[in-house]
Amino acid sequence: MIKTAPAYSYSLKHYAGRTILSIVDEYNKTNASTSVTNSVEQVLGSIANEIGVLPPIVIYKDTAGEWDQLLIHSNGQFKAFAPIFTKSNNVNSRTKLELIAIQYTVTAMSDYQEIH
Image 1 (cartoon, helix red, strand yellow):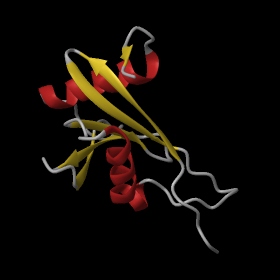
Image 2 (tube, helix red, strand yellow):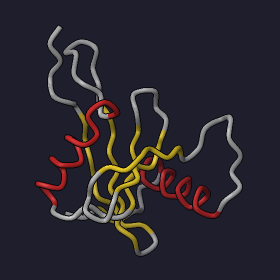
Image 3 (cartoon, helix red, strand yellow):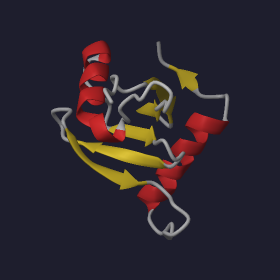
């Protein structure tokens, strides 16, 4: 089976004085697309070609609906996935709490500023 290019959407948001890149995997079994998880370097490269330098905060909703932070090097290259919050981990750091707030803001609230 031949898989098509990854299907995803992205947006740039402004939250608490920071720019956040939010990527949503739109994997579809019907068209057998590659997931963003399995082609993250390609996805980040494509987005960087469109917007220029990637912001330092990149969050990503995977095909299971879980949000992760995509850690990237200063040159925009993918470094690692970092779970923001799962049912099994404790929220015990300011960074995780901030990322949860960003996730909530990006997905549930309508009073954020969309960057065009």
